[in-house]
Image 1: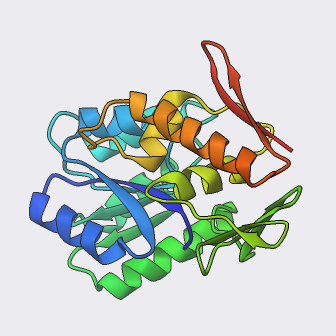
Image 2: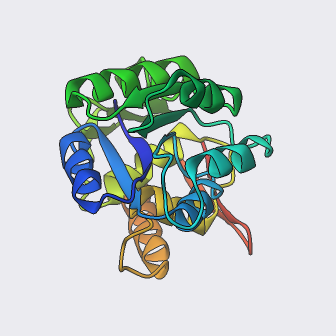
Length: 226
């Protein structure tokens, strides 16, 4: 997985943190520990995939999944991860729109394989190792950026921000979407950090003579144009 953004809704904090740690080399995992916050996070549309427990405080997983699937734009794959192991439990989950179902206890490697399969089927997992726009190229495997073949040094979240914009050319991304995708819902940083990093990225692209423009759409968001 490259640049996958996963929402994990799990009330067992120790388990949630263990999964987050296991997946950290493959994805950015945002944790919600109750149903209400988990549903709200999913409704932002900022995630490529959701891992959903069924027995949650506030609102159970079935209710959350039903609410999501009633909204056409929330079409991300959902993997149910639960201790409920009966056939009726599984049937109910799939009937409400789950894409996969894994029963606890589970092998972490199996969870990773299922996530990778869901991302491939949904088209969220890139099959290419490079992103190219105009005279700029990103080698995703090496996390290297070049402009006209010359290296462009990006620091901190600048690289992730550039990749996110390149993955969505010509699409307006709101400040909230960018913040949640790059910094995560549990970040203690304010959303103004988005403006700071976009400003820095613009300057570096201009200095390198990259034929790209990051436009600010007033009161809406940001748009990458080549």
